[in-house]
Every structure is written in structure tokens, then in C-alpha cells.
Length: 140
Image (tube, rainbow, N blue to C red):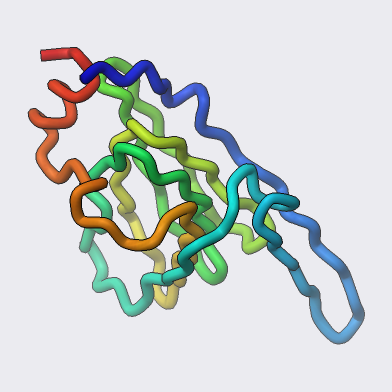
């Protein structure tokens, strides 16, 4: 199977930030703030210094990745191109389409990574080996 998705199809989405002198709030709604319907939410925290997360791609799953606290970098690859995006604001989310390899690195102390997903967990949707990913992309 060949996947034509490109890292250039992934982009930052600025989420609505409602400012109040007692604190800010950001609301995320599936199909409104997100370019997909929301079916799963999870978050990563207490990531040890130097640790990496991700290291996989999805066949069908769309995601929005948000640094709700602290910062981290997201490394994206489509098998031909690579780019690194720093996330460090809770009102910016990185929209990652299916068929893109992602790695999360450089977590700051206390960083929290919120992930909003278009589908429920399905182990068969994951591509966990980069060589398998390249074959999926048709780059073998």
C-alpha cells in the first residue's frame, strides 16, 4: 500500500484562547476546533529527561498534539522529508495526519503532552518499525 501523505499537510492549529484576569481557558470541540471527530484523549507526563515518545506512524488515525504545560519537540517524517516543530503553548496544537512518522523529544521538566485522536485505540493502526513505515509509504 502506498501513502501519499506529506509532512507539509501537518500544521499548527491555533486554538481559541479566552482570556480572563483570573486565568485563561481553551476549549476544544471535535468537528469545530478539530478537523476530525474526537474519539479518544490521552496525555503523557512525567517523561524522564532524555526520553523519547512516539516512534511510530498511524495508518488511519488523525491527531492533535498539544503541549498543555512545558515544551517538547515533535519530529515528523513522511519518508522523504523531515521537520521538527517545537510545541510550547497550550493554545497551539500540531495536527498530524495519517501516514506520518512522529517522535516526541526534548521534554522540559514538568511537560504535559495532550493528544486528541480521531479513533479509539487499535493496535493494527500502528506502524512501529521505520522500515515497515517506508514500505507503507512506497519508499522501499
